[in-house]
Length: 610
Image (tube, rainbow, N blue to C red; front, side, top):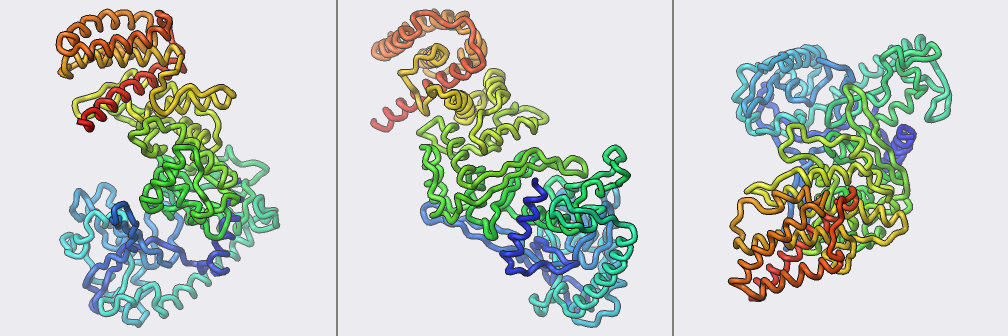
């Protein structure tokens, strides 16, 4: 289904380009720097040619970001290891230097930089030796004279700083930066001629050995692709379709002949997927997963920008517009899609991909109308909102961070769990039980420290628990018990026990004027969350001593706490539950957090009134 959708999307991209397509033998590359050569082949300067993107922010401010420029360069080979390409854009091939701890060096453990540069120089010397244009002569002189070992302190390369490592380069003339090597007529004529000759030889060889069959995607009888082009993922280049081991072969077919995907379909889906993974507005990285999304229309910028924002990307639109979208989402109102240049009826796809050695592992693929996706994500944000005083969007990355210990040596969430969370958010279905169990376990086992008092329990963890409980009740056609802020009318025993624990903690802190190294939260929270009947009576006795101390200095404060305890005890009928189930433990935690938040909000309001 994904490959078929990508082939259709490739047709949409071709339509957007007015029927024009990338010429055979060429590919789009993201280029950040232009190396300007002197006639002698020396580096005269290196220009930063990235596009400057200005995004309006609040209070008239502007946020400036930089994005690489898309350039058409000779197609790079799709082989593992060292390869020889006409021209190049990767720094270690061009200059034979690695960036190691801020220093340029030709040395590395595998000698990769030297081997890559030697292969690049040998291939391109032969290609450029008979080309006589000014830029080609300068580039040939560069190949002849460049010595990596003597250029480790080159001021122009050092000027690139940390950007040297993961950004790509092209070549131009210092006398005229608009004269670019890849656009030189003499170069293009020779390159295109050699590529066409190579294609004729390859097609002839393929015709002798290949098998034609009905394409599983396009439906026509076409030559089947033996090897598929690689997909560029953040974790490395991988194959979408790859059958190497004999266990995957059947009916006497070998390699990718088993897939019955034609060469034509293969070129379509690989080019479309590489476009998506190379464009920031069409993908987002969450842990080790690459989330790819697109609308089946020629121009899907409006749909993808809004979707990126709802996934937690604040750069997708200007900040004022995003604030309005988020506040609408929190109160359950879907944004006006037409005003945001998005089509609610467009077919929208979301795929979760992750590299698995040299192959792509497809975690999920969702397809629905765009308006349905947005409505479900709006409900997702509404379910997660839990503090009206601190309204902020909760991204999938925020959720992921709350499911692992802050001191974990391997802070990774199992990919099936993250996939299930996304499935619930995109489809409006119940969150996985493992999500509730994991976050409650983290609340009970993690501890705050001097620098961060919001590790154990914070708005995101409370929001996750609230979302799990409310969504389960809503889908079962029951009343949602958990509100966004403290609900004094909630009669749930577990919720009331959580509120009561918060009152006992506040009494202890008030009696000690906040000068405590360890509170009852540190000592009893986990136990009280599971077996309140055993713990809360002990805390009730302890609170009486603290109340006497408070009353000695502030009788009104003592009366306030006694009255609050009495109100909660009356709703509990004077008895505590013996044990709490997983969902009830969630209610306990939310009740505690909302009561504590209410205390501090009232304290802040009284200070501001003074």
